[in-house]
Amino acid sequence: MDVFKMGAATAAAAISRGELTSEELVQSCLNRIDAVDADVQAWVHLDHAHALTQARAADKQRQAGRPLGPLHGVPVGVKDIFDTSDMPTEDGSVLRSGRTPGADAAAVALLRESGAVILGKTVTTEFAVYGPGKTRNPHDPARTPGGSSSGSAAAVAAGMVPLALGTQTNGSVIRPASYCGVYGFKPSHGLISRHRVLKLSGLLDHVGMFGRSIEDLALLTEQLAGYDARDLDTHPVAKPRMVDITREAPPMPPRLAFIKGPAWDQAEPDVVEGFAEMSSALGDQIEEVELPGNFQDAMEWHRVIMEADLALNLARDYRRGADTMSPRLREMIERGLQEKAVQYNLAAQQRPLLGEFVAELMLDFDAIITPSANGEAPLGLDSTGSPAFSTLWSFCGAPAVSVPVLRGANAMPIGVQLVSAWGDDARLLRTARWLAEAAPGE
Image 1 (cartoon, rainbow, N blue to C red):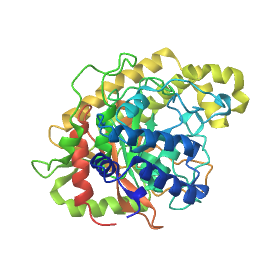
Image 2: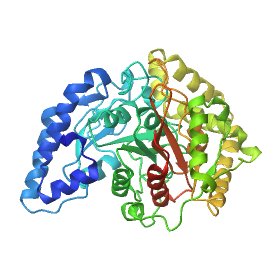
Image 3: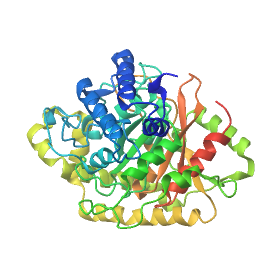
Image 4: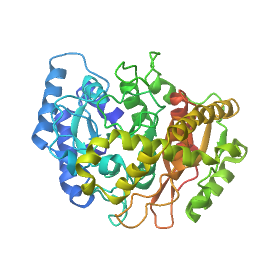
């Protein structure tokens, strides 16, 4: 087996036992990057020597008998909107070119504490919104990898790194995970600190991640979850036992609520057919549930909040360089500048109502099942595709995971999205692992 193909949990265990060195793993990943990244272009900052220096330091720590973290020696890619003390963070914009923050984002600091090697910074779209970066889909370079966590999803999918951090304000983890055929997880809003991560919307921003298995996602989430007084949306509560619960078998076969949602008319035939096959295979374990009519406006509520917050949080960049921004980002900011406070507050008041609906639904079901995206990754690199199937769940802050179990007519991956109630992250990943094993073959 090529070492770069190892999952994070497997690699961490092998390094801990002395069967593998971090240097061997990191070098194998760097060799893989050298072999394939010219076509994929997932990285915006990568220093081979610095990555290997971190790996050798991790090996010396193990050899010295010092305590090892759960991700000791494992390389992780980091989306280029997380501040890093030893690498540039440019937020996908020429307006931030050359920016060197000199301090780590909270999530990056926790990665280092867990023993991980920060392999490099992955490509993001412009300010993590819609303007595409240079990354291409590893399955077909003529297609988009999705956005905004483009490079993170593509790097994991192409075998360059076992884990990568992303973020989601609308559909920026779940959609690229679907398009690239990897597991993607957007935890509950506030589970992971966003301190020193590019702020687009405090109400909507989530830290997320990509991996090759549910177990790897659980392992990474467990290291990052926790209270941080610098992020007012985190909470001083016990950390979830992500790994232990995910590894357990469900006490009963899970029941899934199939919600089409307001974007169902955008679903392509591959998605419609795939969900029909899945419903047939799962039988009475899946039941269609209608979303209450008052939530049909949730897409508009999300737009109001996101664009008004973009106008606030990118105001300085807009003032000094609006002409360098993509037309779509400029238009979003300019619409956001026109939003009225009453409309913003009315939209914000709907978030807990949708969250309460999901929580009540989970009294009878283990998860909501819905598409991760409307179809295969679109051809062309001038768009990152539609985030519409993620909007509801980003809006209310519910945890969501994309499971790569379907294929389209062009043999491109299509993800199935599972959603649960806020705070129910561990059980959601356990259900996702069950679905990955129970779903009909591609």
